Amino acid sequence: MTYNLQRRDFVKQLGLGALSLPFLSGLPSLGFAGASAKKQRLVVIFSPNGVVPDQFWPEEEGENFTLKPILQPLAPYKDKMLLLHGVSDKIGGDGDSHMRGIGCLLTGTELFPGNIQGGSHTPAGWASGLSIDQEIKNALQSNPETRTRFGSLEFGVVVPERADTWTRMVYAGANKPIAPIDDPYKMLSKLYGQLKDRESLKSILDPLQADLAKIRSMVSVEDRQLLEEQTTFVREMEKELKQENPAAVGHAVPQLELGVRDTNENMPKISKMQIELMVNSFKSDFARIASLQYTNSVGQAKMSWLGIDEGHHSLSHEPDSNTDAMDKLTKINTWYAEQVAYLCKKLAETPEPGDNGSMLDHTMVIWTNELGKGSSHTLNDIPFVMIGGGMGYKMGRSLKLGRVAHNRLHLALAHSFGHNLKTFGNPDYCGEGALSLS
Image (tube, rainbow, N blue to C red; front, side, top):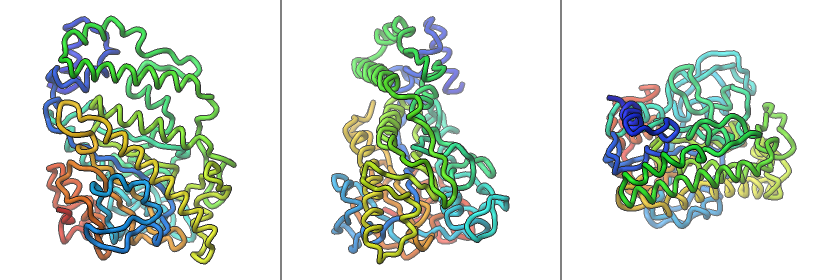
């Protein structure tokens, strides 16, 4: 019997409303499928336009390494960190480096021919395979012990409404991009349902008080606390969304090389809300795979809250000799590192429901990018910063890998979930097998 049917039968037998289903998912004492299995999660975080290498990568290799300025916000997690310098996207074919950078980042396979024209390269279309997060999700969903309500959740922060190769990194299959949800209101509605529109936002919880009281009487003390935390979170999120100006949480719509709206003032708040929604979704065991995409490849966010008025992509094209531009790019990437650190902090502060340790101990957070360096558009030395546990890797290290194909990293990720693929993406770049990170 499927995961959802088991819960629906349970709800029906108790005379509960279907709206109470989301509040049952993370309660181990109810004994549903997946509740007793050891949880292991993967989060992929994307930020665009490359990094400033000499402000990002440690000089040292091994356990004794010094974090450069961009990575300083992640210092509290240094012993849980794995820095992979030398991972390269070797996928060729159609499309410019930005397009292949994001489209092949998680898929490890070529873009289809298409009519999306990049910068002085052959046009291209969508990726020709599914992304590694979805591959792992499918494996987890095929097993009743690891199946969850959604399988995966795709979060976004100021991602353009338009759909093209520069705006999508997650793929359900060849020619099947998945759009991230970048409005916290819409994500809350996806998780808990029954919300119509922001202007007429009603409380999710008010109609459920009798059902929630009945559930509380049936579960353990620990699960009762989880249920209280979940309902408190939903109530607080509702309050925050009601206070939001509906017009303020929207989409920037970039034009390639031409810029975006003058400001993206809401990025910090949207980022915080999306991270909190993600952590709560994990606590409720809605999904064990997630992604968080900041803007898009060629993203032109103008981070005025950092005192920066230029678009991010424009700055990334400046030469290294432009020290002012390099300082601003360092600030931008440091801000992204702060967002990663905020997620890690929330996970580290949250006890793992039904198990030992924190949620960070059961989660691997990977921060990546479509380019190694923006001005050169290189697909070598793609940033891969891994933080957390649960994967069996030896953490607390800086590795120099010598330009290995990123397909091998994807194989290692799959293997850490017990999904022992022989190849992933283009098999030509899998010949040496999964990357050894133990």
